[in-house]
Length: 126
Image 1 (tube, rainbow, N blue to C red):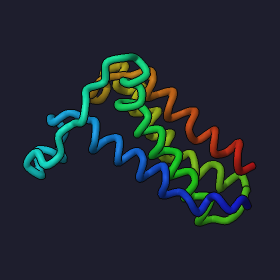
Image 2: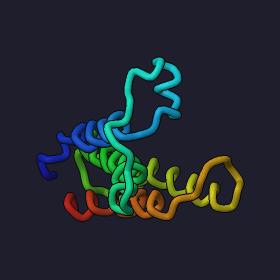
Image 3: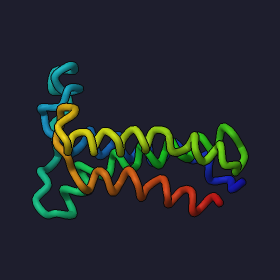
Image 4: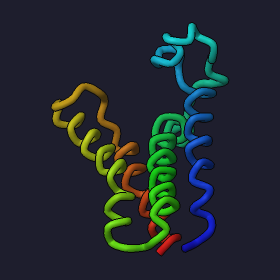
């Protein structure tokens, strides 16, 4: 098992940091906390929008995948299945938004992040 699985908290922290520093005031944490955080800047380019709006979800999925490998300390098929549990929920959520089964806005980049981020970790670990 690679030793970098202990760093599951790094993508989690990075995703939270992007969320808090760059997301709009309309998010629920700002409504609950009384607009403590204001965005540093608004994303303009496509890449900036991907980083601010899609990357945090991918980083959180990546963090979860690393955490499962860290907890289970093996590379079995069941560990891989467990590591995809949350990303699969994200994927199903995005697809459900596309078909208007649940409220929200479908975003292809979110879907890509939920798929690619855990696959990067699986590739690095196995």
